[in-house]
Image 1 (tube, rainbow, N blue to C red):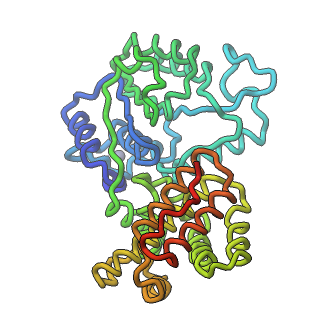
Image 2 (cartoon, helix red, strand yellow; image 1 turned 30 degrees about the vertical axis):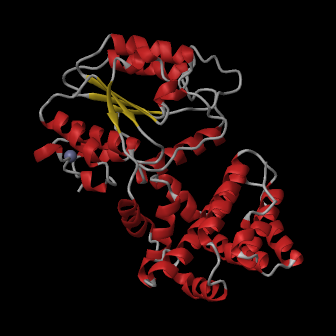
Image 3 (cartoon, rainbow, N blue to C red; image 1 turned 45 degrees about the vertical axis):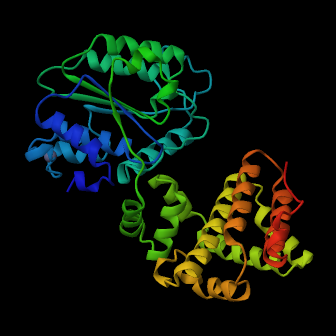
Length: 388
Ligand SMILES: [Zn+2]
């Protein structure tokens, strides 16, 4: 059951399970790969396997012993889960313990985030003002490692997003790495290995994590987030291989956004400046560029559906299943619309948003380009409106 709870990552799982079951776990592992693909989740599973009292074949933790349960709750005294914390008021980062000078509110929030991580190892811990892994956290690791004994069994230290160690903390950590204790396994996870000291990287055994594929994501969204088939398929297309990015999308108002897209397209294709303007104001009202990128990503996906349906006539390959009627009526009305060209316009708009061009400007130009593409004779698509 335990390893089954990990989404995809067959290669990474095989590497760590083989190491555990053959008793060849390195002193330090470095899990690298994109955000939200399960690096922390596998690190926690490794800790479970190393602390399990009834470890099964192929490093399968039993899931019910004291070791398994306390690791899963992130409450096992021999498993430390280290992450970035805010600095407290008047804190002496060198001598104070990491939580000593934090306010009650901050401590409560941190506890809550740890509890969320325990419930869902794919949860991204997010604490305001927590920008770095404190040197005091690293010193604590050092002290605990020194106290390790054979009777206590293997101690596991997981440093989540290890690139958040700044130079002082990283150098202190390097010392711990240089004096390996046979009773301690260090696991560093990071999406930005290039930000780690090369001396740290060279002392760890790296395991690279892959992006999750659409099939794995669709299944995960359906099983874990009770998404319906259409939402799961759409989210997988937009999540770019990251489960946690997909969950963020699911928590946002994906459905509303998708209907906004149809309204935007309708406004643009009505060639009614008022209608188009109203939609543009609505879509850009949050001022959030990431949101707008997603909106445009969904628009490109919608147009791809229209294109695919026109080419194949096969309704089952459409991602936006619940908007099939709109897609069909678009295809009927604009039977010769150059959808590929339109998708190109949308993709250039996404790039413009990333380059910090003003969102209302980008969408106004896009609305005109889409209308031109649909209404002007085929040769006339080379609209003069181009965002520099
Ligand atoms: Zn167990």
